[in-house]
Image (cartoon, rainbow, N blue to C red; front, top):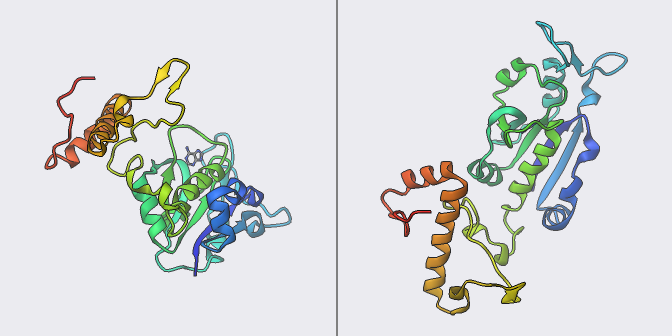
Length: 243
Ligand code: ADE
């Protein structure tokens, strides 16, 4: 049984979208993963297949009904251990550790919200994880679901070639990646750091580590602080260096 993304959405034609291309597209074609898209409208109520209603307490916008979402989730075969995730700007921030956990399991069920969101009771009753992809508001959960799936699919066995191996990439050690260079060695008067042309693999590894640490310190003090507290038993190369 391949890794399965079950997606509940009012816009089923948005999937697989960009994930039908490139690495994820090839993996979809060869059956490494499976994209099972369900139209929430099909579970709507009444003559108009209503999926939403006005919010109790008043206010703008509409809320997706708990009973409709519940019925839609009932239609999804319960894969053992496949988490159900609701994409919302109110969720906890999605991190690479979550992606690794999702990719290691049988798949994920993704609930994509529109309007003002989903009635809180079905999220509680179903123990649905609430996840945000960043501190900005999208017009719906679909693009966030595509982001989550892209990050998962590339980690599935056989999807990334050895050249694209995830071992050294950003976040694998809680650090951002070092900068990359290729030919030409000089471009518009800009050269490549000498050490990268030296052939000295130990020196190159040391330089890359220093660069990773510098860039993390400068751009992401939050990640740098977390890295320092996690690696206090394993001193880093340039801890004392100023920016
Ligand atoms: N839906 C709307 N905005 C979102 C965000 N930032 N993350 C996840 N889902 C969303």
